Length: 434
Image (cartoon, rainbow, N blue to C red):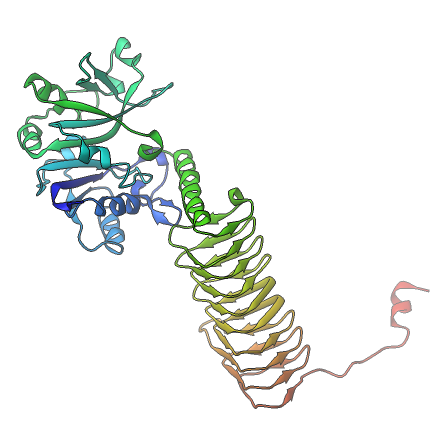
């Protein structure tokens, strides 16, 4: 595919007031990434000239996208003087002869779904689909020669026009000559007092240009205008992500109950049980993630995790058993057993070590975080606390109920700290009677 054939302009300037959120609409997350991320990612597959038009929270939107993409142009729309989709095009200067205009609130778009715009030869290409309930969409009027006559926004449509079920999917392709000629001619004489990109259609029609409709799959061109739309799109995206990984060999039990973000990767044969949440830059290789577990930005190799375990960011787990109700944070565990009810934070744990139930690495003093280093073949009894910074050398036994203070525990020792048991004869009967 020649990326020099098409320029892409992504309209991402709107407030998204129907989202009822202080956050810019295009920054709302779908499967772990801002919705605008997916549109730019798809665009990069077919074009080397991508411009994003921004206005509302422009600094945040630009900074967020630049954290993912390095070769994107940004243009700030003058929404005060030139509001609307037509106004957004005023200061854009695309390089290539065909210009594809996308919306920043369509995260389900893919490069493959856009291929029809590249394959169709016309002065203007307009995406359309038919809806049983077209409420909220602009209507597309098509003549007997399968040419687009004009597009009318719902608020400006007549009663007869509102009966049309063919709607505007919101994506357009123009020749560069069309953009250069008609954008300066747009007017804001309409109900919204905005400059509509769609007004180009009537002008081009009057000049006998070729205006072709392109039928598209609604799933890929679904716009997001509300939190309900966001939820619906999330479900579609999740289905795509999980279907792809299952097709590549991952076993998922009750996949509809599993959440996997787009940045997660699997290698080899993995099993993910029901109710799991796997987020961020996580890699899972040849491992079994059991039901109800949460994994964030971690690496898991040849291990089993859960059920009901929580791996927080920067955890590295290899050849290890992490059991139920175990939480690990920013720790390196290799060939370790932590069966249940433990917290391991800011730690390095060596091969052959067993961590008993109720063990806690006390890594935080209220101000700073400190590290715990546990060597190889260490046995830590239940209900022990290791107060960081602390190092436990290889081949150490820590008795149940021991508090290990900051410092060093030498190799080969038994560490034990318990108060002597005290019994008071008859105490129970004194309080509760015989």
